[in-house]
Length: 360
Ligand code: PEP
Ligand code: MN
Image (cartoon, rainbow, N blue to C red; front, side, top):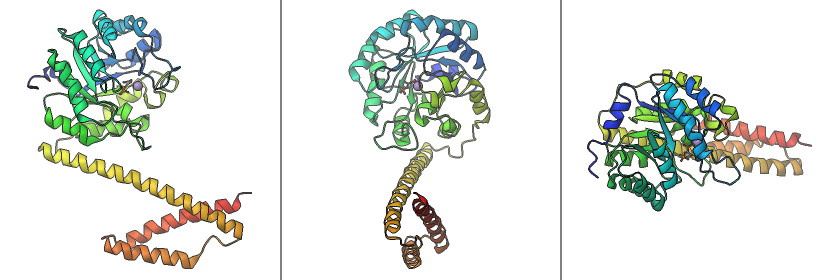
């Protein structure tokens, strides 16, 4: 892919701020769409998003209003001047989106995994001048993501961008979708001219970490964001936990700090992201191990209770701490640090066991 001028659409759309695409997960009612859009009128938000066809994991949930919602979005555009973005997942959606003159089409994470669907959409929009944003596939497969972008590029679509929305994981973690920064940064290294947008909403899966995630995106030089916003997030018909109100989103934007880049060198930036992702993973592991350790301590508590043995076995404790300090020393961990950590762990174990003793 010769990607030289692929980002000129972005400079035009968002010359002064990072690109901000905001709006509800789904278009629920005309009133909800308009009320939310009115709250988002701000020069730093250029695009209004709303899902019209919703890919849901299980049937029976709200799957979007489809065509019926498209005139509502037209109203948003006329009233607010914002550009409109929707997700399309097949050629029929593409046809309707073109018919209703939607400005930006995004390909969802469940569609970019499927080369047949991506090709069908690419063929359906061939020759149009629309902006296409391709979300990373749900599985952490860089080639599949690149392949989806290539399919659009090959039919002549040049207003392209990608959205990093995190990857599914079979292990429960702190995020709904693991960021796997390294994959996104590898993409950025290979195609520096394709704008990369961060979707903190679908990575976090909860609103309380949207700000931190967006700041991380700015620090890693992402060029824009897609953030879910709803005038009444708690009552949203889909993704209620991760949506923020328009007021909260504006506060988040106020707090975001476009730092002077400490590292100009992209390799240093990549390295930093790589190490941070390792730290996140290790912290996750630490928490899981601690939880496992506490469960075992509780089992021991049950045995002690049955046999009427005291919770605190001080010789066992002295033995544990001495062993840990010795091992720690060999691992370049100070005695003070190992002592503090083990005291805290021991305290928590004792409290858990005492709770078992108190149980009737
Ligand atoms: C969405 O943006 O609402 C959506 C369904 O996203 P994803 O494809 O990232 O799950
Ligand atoms: Mn959503």
